[in-house]
Image (cartoon, rainbow, N blue to C red; front, side, top):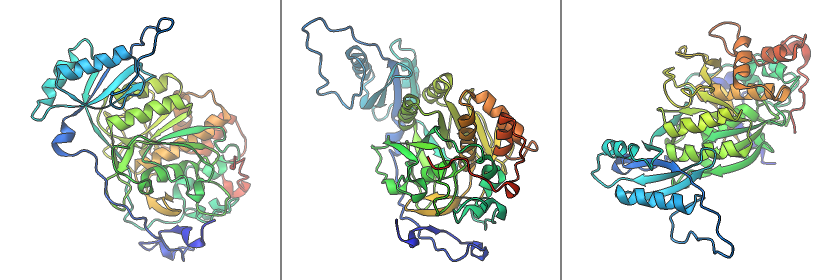
Length: 449
């Protein structure tokens, strides 16, 4: 176990006056990381073609090798030949290529020649019978910030039944009735794919929770110790309960599959950036991984390729939970995809279409390096809903997105109120017990698996 100095929490802006005073916070060193910029970024496009399998080789034939081909993963020779033909015809430089098995597509990241008219080039490609999809490489962003105000403590009775010292500071955990809901479920046997920055799997409050990690940002120099946003999201969902340190996740029995598709862009903040290329690879991996839930605490413009991937996940019964942007618009990825459970912060404007509300302000969660801090935004609200979804799925794995939305939407006490995980669990299980954990002693179901 690390020295006590590592179990630290940032108690600033007057929070030290709370009963939890005495802790210090050491901010992790973070430097800004950038992907392609300027004209080079504007010239990057994504093109998809049908991935056609090659005919089976005749007896005694030698399979073709991939020698000399740039970064190819999968894809038959006929498909690769088509990709080369497209590159030659449009004077494109291939940056990378990959196959999306779920969509039976071969995708290429191409760079247009300097001085090209990107719009005109894409229009020509879209009329090309060989091309299934052609779009610009688009940017996406996470939705969280560091609060400027002094967070207040949660109701004291939420600490009952837990030995995690900061549980009394978890306003979001308290407001959604997570402690009471955990009398019946912890999210056990549910795997959540967190498509985000990476996650600090070595954090003591994630011990045993992160079952897999993959990095799809290898073209961007972004050290793993900068993975603040993904660690924050994973902490809200699955921080270990009753381990004597830190906080408690909404679904502490859940396992996390960390798929790194975003990278930090600002020092000492959780803001992060992703693009079509990295998100498409991560979503493809999430679909094929067997994860029951995909958490997308991010968003951006409509994107045909990403929307096809999320639609495929929904079609396969994977629950996709996505963040509503701060302006509450619902015309961008991922919340514009039918079947996605959209989530806004309960203190934000109402969304144009049905969306769940959950706590997203002054949320205490994990930071890389064994630290803790507050964060705000619909990213954190989305994580609360994902945790609640995991609790419900443990109790009834047959639930689909429509049923889950109805249970959680119906749990709110008013139109603008946050979800109530305990009320949703009671409705599902028809339990007669109330949701006041102060009178029940919490009785955590089985939070350590």
